[in-house]
Length: 151
Image (cartoon, rainbow, N blue to C red; front, side, top):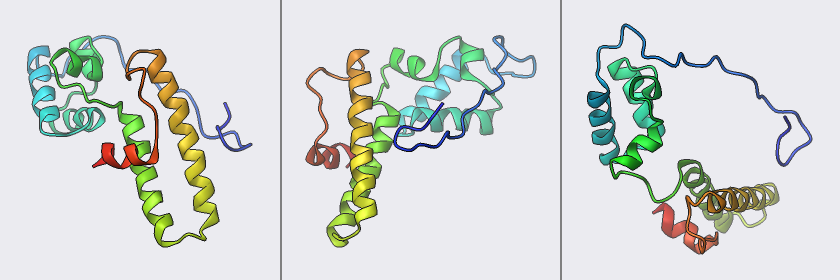
């Protein structure tokens, strides 16, 4: 598998799959895991951070193995779904940071190129999410809306 904007191969590989059933040493019930995940998500943490907290603090290796649902699906069923997908939100945050950098350093051409590559990555990802009905059909990326959605 190759990278999007370079000729290099990248670092992709297979990961060991989690076992499909709940491990025997996990003491939490699915309702408890769901309740804790929703509580953490309502506190403002992202789905990945909720999963890491459940793994590190509560000893739940995989929410999917315990509850039978993925983390984002679990949060959406309980009404805590974020308005933007997590990976798109992270890209928007990086773009806003680069835009602020380029206002103070306008001759930084390598970061200007990085900004344009990142914006094309956002447009590609937005097209993917619009096709799968996870973003509204009229959502489009502009620099001004990126600043508003990050803050």
